[in-house]
Length: 364
Image (cartoon, helix red, strand yellow):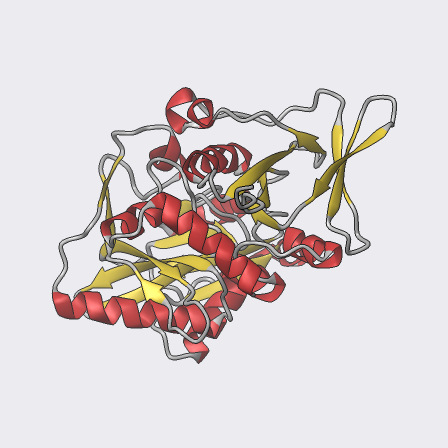
């Protein structure tokens, strides 16, 4: 008799979710599932509807691509139930409430962006379930999602980042005049952003003080805390970071660059709808010394937040050097996403990248 075939590792890929980045998550999941090494891994796709239901989902990665339009996870009546007893077994529940086992899950790849997916919420749930998962833990995810706290930690670590002030919904209700007055010390133009949102949702560039109130009101429709940052003149440079195996140091990719045309900044439309609004270049044309400095700062930022697994780190390259904009703990995996592109240009294919992320999750 021949040797038995090794058992495939079962990977539940979570996507969709309750955030306003739902459709981007679906497209990213298509990228991950399309690249996964099916000789080593068995994929169990689990969609999450906009109301938070976990549902079975048959995936054709090609149909989830951004070029096919933004997709939504919808319920057909059946749901998926994760157990919290440490068994890692999951069940499908039909419309009548009857449960059938889908077996044990070895690891989860939460390809979820934004609120409830990238903010430590799903990570805490998976910790309760006792299932290893790809990417950052509860604390790093939560802190990175909050621009106020992450920037405070970056400054404490000595990493240059733009000056900012914070306004909350409560402050705007109780004393809006004082709340807006404290922003007057920031040099215009400023960017007004929801403190805990991604994909440039709810962001306004403000060039005159009389427009601040409207911009804050817009951002508050997405979050109850708003961060107002001084605008930075510089090139938008990004890189990808991958945690090292064992005692190995982090690996940082080559640099990518975003050049926006015809818009004030790299907003949601430019990222995912209007393909002519921005040009993404990888590798970016920067000097060897700038590349080295960027990679060192990216590692420093990764460590400052206690990141694990992966991150995309976004910088401004100014005449005085690099300024850190933000760190993204579950970057996109779509066909246009910078994270896989930068590692691809660094010699790591998307299939190998996905495999490494799964292996890191099992190791951690």
